Length: 331
Ligand code: AMP
Ligand code: TRP
Image (cartoon, rainbow, N blue to C red; front, side, top):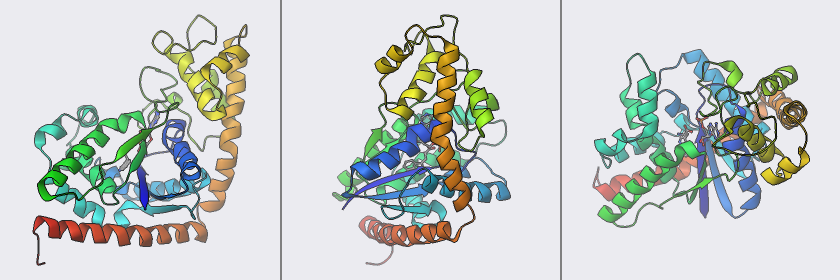
């Protein structure tokens, strides 16, 4: 059976960048690829690569689980689980660290960025993070991995590690392909449209969170940075602000950039932003309603238990086979 694997870190509140770049894509794929199995998880082991307060982490894990389902993941189609509840993920990370090189991890741009931003101790976990991610994927022999643009380099590393292991021990891992959304793979900050919309940005106005109320959603769009030209035309390089808003519009409505430009031909930012505020709100409202029903429900607990059981079976088998392949333990 062909498999699709992906995860999101429970590190903060989910914003529309993660939603449009990642979550929405999962939902689309589950409908488009009925013959694939889906393993989607809450990447809590990844979250502790930068130290987290215990209560905060617990809360974010639960919230993210509810968000996944509220966004439309179908628990009948998708195995949703919490990464740390399947111990093979940490075990695989260690085994893959012994098949990766310092030099290739040092080249990871996300590590360079994150370690520069941190004032206090950078953990070994942050450095080795891409090997944990490679393990997440290779454990399930995933064929496709839907991610946003920023994860492409980690996927390339995963492929390199898989090929290295396959060359050394004979075919063992499926070499995965990234699946990057055509539109929405990189939603930019609303206040600084040349950098990515991020949950760690200290400026709250830079993003719209999935659970933001109507007035905040509309306020954030209205105050989003544009330029002085006043026309609705997509031009990523010269006009990143309006282009980002057009991208958000396009990935929610499915309209092309050109169609959007035609609708707003002769109209200004005010009208465009008012419409976009309403479009974003209408997209998020049903998600928020469903989220509130799910958050403390037995239904959610059962979904996560079931996901853990199914994921554990596959992951345990693979890790034991890998131990054996390498020559660990007894045959
Ligand atoms: P994270 O929220 O950083 O754990 O990322 C979860 C997924 O969302 C990954 O596949 C990211 O590539 C994607 N993602 C995060 N931020 C954005 C963004 N601003 N635009 C598009 N995709 C994003
Ligand atoms: N590293 C990813 C991120 O920060 C999340 C992630 C962890 C992931 N493991 C994964 C994504 C495996 C895809 C597959 O966005």
